[in-house]
Image 1 (cartoon, rainbow, N blue to C red):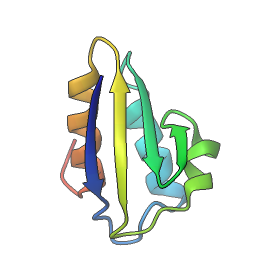
Image 2: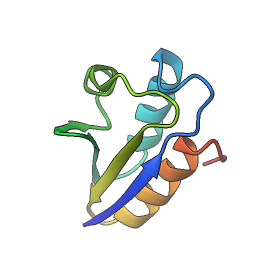
Image 3: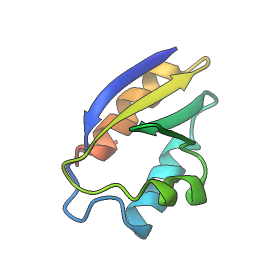
Image 4: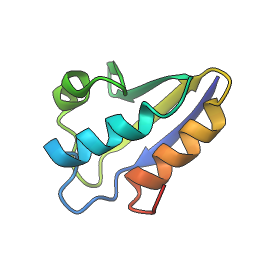
Length: 86
């Protein structure tokens, strides 16, 4: 299992379009990928789950991945959430 604490650095936070792009990024990996914010933990491959978090710019979350490409998944999702190219 790989996990990392990340602070969101996206101008408009995670509204509909960035959430859709994040779900696409998470779906590239075989690993199961979760985003945890506070006491909520959702599947990062689920648009509805991700939208339910209502995350904004500057908020902290934890990315958790488990599987054959877990570290790659965490690293690239961190790049996406911090405004770098994945």
